[in-house]
Length: 204
Image (cartoon, rainbow, N blue to C red; front, side, top):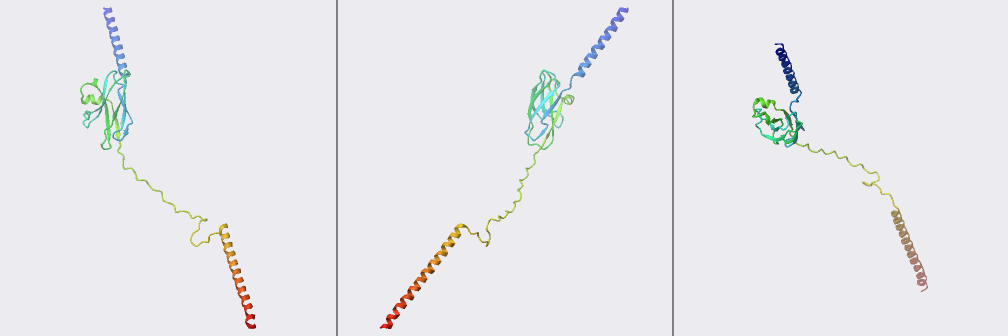
């Protein structure tokens, strides 16, 4: 009798220990999650999706979560989970839409058919779509008026005499003096000729 009671007590203790170990293992297992790099940009942006905490060997569908939260908007990529429970894949954000928050979902195939419960359990991340506005027109800096050069000649200012000008002036003065001297010789010759002819006229 005592042996049976002892066996039952030992069995209950072992069962409690096993349940505690299973519960601890379940709590220690990280929940699956995904991250987006970058997490914002314009339509057509290439985004890297990194997931962790998934079941090793599972297949993950990266979807855009639709308005009804069922992921019916289409699958962007499919990734295989590694032995460490992580995966990395690349998706392209659809272009042409308005600026909004797009929700990406990583749905493991091990969840089975989609339902509201399984979709709620699947990890998600948001991407902010930014629509670029019109580029601003280039501004032209005001043009400063030119600063007058004091060495430049404007209006009726007198040009400074240069060496060439002084040589030209001296050459012109010499020409005038030579012409005056020649004119004086001609006048003197005429007077002398008149004086020579006058005595001959008186003698006749």
